[in-house]
Length: 102
Image: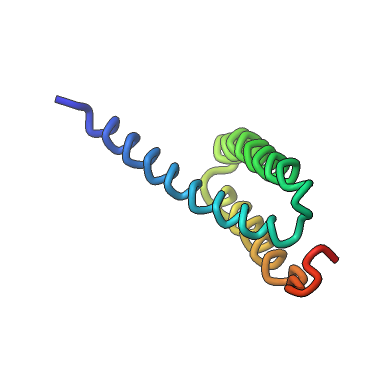
């Protein structure tokens, strides 16, 4: 019999993969509107690197916060970071469809 934890891990990894695929396609469409075509590869590499670096840093920092202060502060920190990201997302300048690279 397979360990139930392994099945949950496989399902969670699959769900994360689908989620990342959706996010990546949204990034490509958005970046295509604001970056000149000759800079698309660099922009997408930059976004992917930023994402990977953020995941690595947050995994380490989250573990330290949890070990030292518990889940309450960890969730507070993540909530504040999420709120800041949301505020940035809603205040980004809208793209002019006639002159998208300005």
